Length: 264
Ligand code: PGA
Image (cartoon, rainbow, N blue to C red; front, side):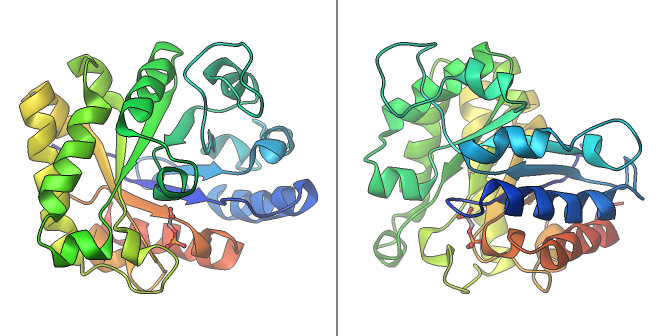
């Protein structure tokens, strides 16, 4: 089964609108020269305040803008209401998003997001016609205690609970060991592939073999231009969720270029 690779940039809480537009332009000018099937699915997740700014420079004129999909970094599961500070799936869609990242470890850690909330968000995103990028990952303590697989399997089972096999098949998972995020310590590619295979087996168990074959599972955590080729050469790693290295057009474009060397 060949799965189309994804290279997604998570800009986190960085860049003002003008800076976001400039970086987006830098990525557009690179991707414009490539087409599918060579070009991976390229996704950018700016802050909420920059969603409209980047979408304003997406167009069909051949500039490359229409080759980049946009993601929100979070959402609420309700359609509307008294939830100060939140945005709904419909609002993210209205601002031009096709994807929404949910369950990032920073949201679990600093904003107390639970597996149950992430499951509600995943269902709301799919019901709204968008695609969730569901993050999971273990802490260093969990890894050292030998409970990585158990912890991640629990996160994935909870996130996918009650979701149809068809919807699971089109979803995206990002395996991001927390100790590798923003630390420069990339997880060994063979080990990342082993965990991702384990995740695929959990998906098979909850949603069947077709969903497990179709779902794209990314690796995230200190991905750099120098690491992506080895990561993409692994059997089960379908792409990357990139933080720090997505904040400069040069490094993000090099990650896309190096992905294309492997995944043709
Ligand atoms: P990093 O972040 O590439 O800076 O480690 C990845 C992420 O948090 O998605």
